[in-house]
Image 1 (cartoon, protein in one colour):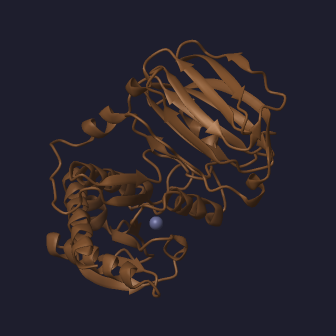
Image 2 (spheres, rainbow, N blue to C red; image 1 turned 45 degrees about the vertical axis):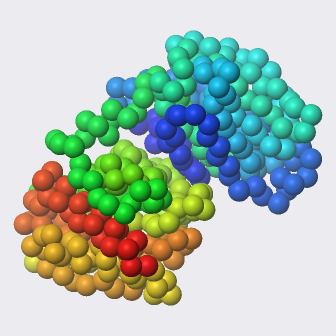
Length: 366
Ligand SMILES: [Zn+2]
């Protein structure tokens, strides 16, 4: 059942820490300007277990494509998740729907005078003790599902995952307080990336390194958005490269406040002797170049990896991110020695710390 979550097609995925008020908006399409441009046309919920945690997934189909939505946790009712869909009417979906009862009791839909549809999910526990994700999913023709707003609610907090990851408290770096950083662990789910001669998968090494980067950045006060936090496709399994990469770009671009995009990969080549570390940037972006060079220099300084340089490239995520972006080829997974390093938790942390130092350096210099 753990695989079920991979079936979702993500346009936007946001894991939200639940404290106080939170507003999330998706850029509205042109037709959202018109009154009630959207109408609900589908409802479904299901429960599933992923990595030992129970989840409830609610899907609401939105006829007319993208809707703008905002969510907040109302002080008056701490056990209620509240989401507003602008320019949307309830359509044929019932106004009061019983849910699974274990995680949430019921879903209530209320139309307000200004064409807003208020969605309320009544939970069994205060929202602050749980975790949820809100995202939109593209129409799934095979599954006969329309374009949807998806609400996923976990029975427990997710924070313990991050805390349990590392053997020790992460280092704390200066100059990162309030910085908004997007981390993109390469590949995932149905796409393993490159495979080392010893069997290490690029998707696993990239995620382990990225999670270490995330811990250090967070402990340094930065605001981190991850394109994925577990072994999954961001768009959906077996998607085209373009759709999958665009889904990652969308996660970063969704918040105009995000300042940099850092994608983590491992290099591979047919010859097992190829080795070393490199960083890439999109040529027209001066800051992208600065970011790539800053991170690359710190990795070279912190490890025995040979420098292959910081170089210009036309990778999709670099060209399409709306902020300075870099793609780091940490080391060669196709090289025996470097594969062993990439699979070593101490090395994963070491290279993560170097990436964070490079990010600090970037913010000092830009
Ligand atoms: Zn890769």
